[in-house]
Length: 289
Image (cartoon, rainbow, N blue to C red):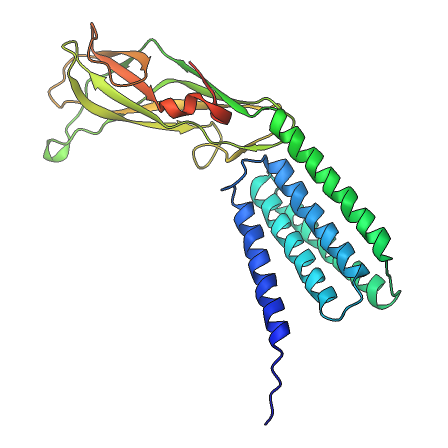
C-alpha cells in the first residue's frame, strides 16, 4: 500500500499547533501585563484578522491554515472570557450556541455563497484591526491598574479556651484584623492579584515569638476572593489572623495590631505586626499604607 506523505502540510500543521499554543500561553496572564478586557479583545481581533486573511488567500492549504488559526484564536478567546468573567451557566450556554451559529454561518458563506475578498480589501481590514489593537493596548497602558488600600484594626483580643481538649491540644482562633480593599482605577477588567501579607507576633521585649497565619477572603466568595475585578469596581477582602492559644491561658489576651515593613523588634506591648511584601508597593499593585 502506497502512502503519500506531504512534508509541507506537516510543517503547516506544526506551525498551527505552535501558534495556538502561543495563544494559550498568552491567555494565562504570564506576559505583557495586559488587562483581561484587552486580552480578550486581542484574541477576537486575531480571529477576525486570520479569517479575513483566509478568505483573501487563493493558494491551496494556506487558506486552511489561516482558518485553523482563526478558529484557534476564537476558541482560546472564548475560553478566556468564560474563565475570567462572572458568567453563569446560562450565559456560557448562550455563548457556545451563538458561537456555533457563527461558524456555521461563516462556513455557509464560504461554501455556498463563495464569499471572497480582494487582497487589497483584506489588507485594509487587517490594517484597521491592527490599529484598533494598538489603540486598546495604548489605552490599557495609560489607564491605570488596580490599587490596594490596607486598613487594620487597632487591636484584637483572644479569649481563653473553654472546655476540655484531647491530648492537651487547644485549637487556634481566627480574628479579623482589618480590610484590604482593591480598586480598579480604569474601565477595563483586570486580574485581582493582592500583595502577599504575613504576620508575626512580637512580645514587649521585642522577641518574635512566632509567625501567625493570614488569609484574605471576600464575603460571599466560595474560594477566598475573586480572581478578577471589573472596571471602576472595588473588592473588599477581610484580613483574618489565625492565632494560637495557650491551654494555660485563663484571661483574654489583647494584641496591638500595627503595620510594618518587617517584624519589629521594638514594641511596648504584645503586638501582631502585619507585614506586606515591599515589592508590592510599586507598579500595578500599588499598596496604600
